[in-house]
Image (cartoon, rainbow, N blue to C red; front, side):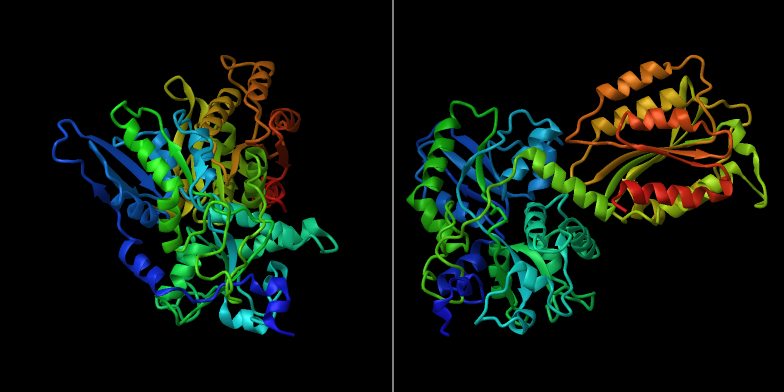
Length: 547
């Protein structure tokens, strides 16, 4: 049977590109600043700053180069989208752009969630690039390519496939790829269990971005002897660039109609002056018009509607003229995807409260240690349970431990890897109980939970963990009904923060911990025998992280 007789056989991409595309990629892909100056007769030129993702910046540069501005200039800077979202929400003093063209509408949503009120949640799409499963050519050939176009399910089931994932917490490719992974196991006898197993496979090789995974390909010029990956989500555009720049380790693109494309929204931000407005309008009209379409075609991106790459409509080695793909899910559905990923991946943002009241000096029979020591040993072991990138803050609490506050920061919020490298385990081993301190539980839990709500981060498992051997003993704190009411007000089903209670020893009040944790969707665990605290703590984390 010939290649053209099966429609699916054209849903692949191999290293075949026109010379013109190679030249554009080589000349413009990594240009970080492009400026068009105003006419000499202009007395007060206005400047417009455009921040864009690196893959769309070359097309914007080509458009800007041909603009005839009467009185102004345009500067294009390339910035990673998540970094821009954070800067727009919490200004770091750098110049604020008037236009932002990230790789995905997800970046606009993220900035809005962080509090950047002048960032729209949508924008006109100027280009598109499908998110594909990039598969090493040798693996694809083993599946019958090019005579057969494998599906995601077939590619991931191939013998010896080593999957990888760009971090969904920061990369829209990783976020949207989760939809493709979920779709790929729909035919399994137990789809939910199969999806969890598949996510666990991918989580073993989760790196910051698709470029990091490309460097891990077998035979890659940047491999450096690191462990290889042979299948991972990537944008079609990134795959094209790789096949041009490193033809020794080619990739084949496998498409899925369940995965939304990168859509490159043109977002006009707040604060555009009357002088800047006509420049922004001219740029927008050009990018969305014929000039933009021509520039986009030269840089390995598709038009906003997903049409085929120029000059390859009849090439059986390239994707078909139009790819029917899913729409970007609502924000709530994206948060659910990321929460599932975080639970499986144990990529977390954790606040840990540890009781250092006087009762923690009690000896644990048969160990030669006190409750404080066995608790800190459990906390130290737990640091190895989380991923190195997990963000963790640790606090101790008693009564009036820091002035009028019942708690004090022991370790600041930072990645676990940074804590371990900085001697955190030694600090934990030196923690002592406060001889005369009571258990200031309620105020400590409420303030820490408020901090966790304020700092909630998508794509991570956001948790508050409290470890205590007693019940609240602070007569000046909020009451239990007041605490429960405040915790109820802080709940957001789309952005959950379970409170996990770990009771230590026979004096821990399980009923109290159960009430507090239930108010947040969390759970209480008690170790009547403090010697078993490590097992109970690990069981608690495993339960909340998806088992």
